[in-house]
Length: 287
Image (cartoon, rainbow, N blue to C red; front, side, top):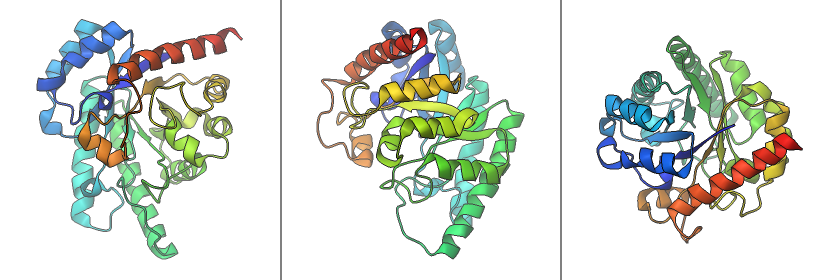
C-alpha cells in the first residue's frame, strides 16, 4: 500500500512558488506520495513540480476543486464550458506529472444541496454522464483515470453513496471513470462502509483516509479495520491519501465547516495518521 498526504492539510490554494517545501516535508515524514489539490492552475508550475518529485522520490497524485463555476452538470452552457476547460487542463497536468488518477467530485459542484424535480434531476444526470464520458475518453488517451468522489448530503445532492456512483459509472460506460472514496463521507452516508467498498470492487481508483471529525485518522469513529479488510479483500492497488482540514487554513475551514481545533497541529494529522495507517495495513497483511 502506498500512502500520501493532501496539500489541503497545510495550504490553500496550493502554489508552486510558495509551497514547494511540502515535497521535502512529506518525504521526511515518510510518505510515498504527495497529493496536489489544484485549485488555481495559474499557480502551478509543472516542470518545477516534476523536478521536486524526482529530487524527493515522491509520487504525485492530483485532485481538483469544483465550486459553482466548475459544474460539469450545470444547465448553464458557460458554467459547463468553464468546468470542461478546467478538467482539460487538470487531465493534461496529471499526465505531465505522471499522476495515474485525477480525483474529486467532478460530476457537479460542491455546496449544491437542493431538492429538484425528478425531471430536472434526470437532465442534470444526463449532462454529468455526457461530460464524464467525454472527459473520461480524453483522460484515457492521456493515460489518466478520472476518479469522482461521492460527497455527504450537506455538500451535494447528486452522488452520496457508492451505489449511486456505480450507477453513474454504468451509464458513462468508460473504463477510465471510477470512484474516489473518502472515509469521512462514507461514515456519514453508507450503511456499512466495508460492504460498500466490496460492492465497488475494482471500480475504486482512489481512497482518501479521513476521520469522522476530519481529524487524525485512527482517533475517531470510522471503522478503520473494516475499511482496511475490505480494501484487502478487493485487492485494492491504488493509493491511500490522508486528507484533512484545520482552522489554520481559513478559506478551506469555512468551506468544510471546521470551527474548532481537531488536532494539536497540522503536522500531527499527517505524522500520526501515517503511523496509524501503516500499522493498520501491516496488521491486515499479517492477520
